[in-house]
Length: 224
Image 1 (cartoon, rainbow, N blue to C red):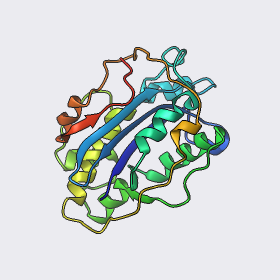
Image 2 (tube, rainbow, N blue to C red):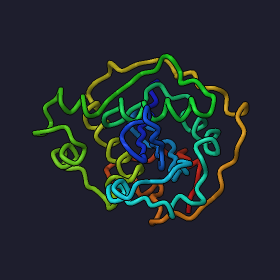
Image 3 (cartoon, rainbow, N blue to C red):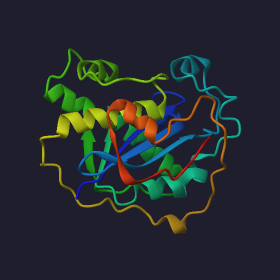
């Protein structure tokens, strides 16, 4: 059975190799019927300042992340949310996986060597969905309803999850064995429950994109 972890990160800049860090991460996990089974959504303290030019893009300020958990704080919940997944999915996945790998490495955790990888940007190009493969263009071409705060991690992850479900609904050739993540109980840290700087996206909010919610769906981290 396939289990897709659709994720998105917002960052301090464009290059993890040059020291840019994650400031927000969201994961929407879909089963093989493309129903949401769990999600995670959290601001992340990058342990460095966010340039004002970047804040103008995603709206996340230094004040917003001042008391946010670090990536290391969130690691047990992140790995728990990724548990059992067969595929990592993102729009322009090389960018998001690059930051995920760098953040894991900074916590002393090695990124799994083998995993199913799906890029909705590449899928959109292959299927010629729109005039370009930008997420906003693809979403518009597929007539997916959008909610406010584009360029926030959970909004982009939710939209990407719906894009995946529409582009793969007739494609059964994506089987893969579950990714072998480190066991969460070997990791330390406990994220604090913090208010967000904008209204939270709930599991039910994801139906706005046209996604169905599984009856046993869970949200491991509640940042209200």
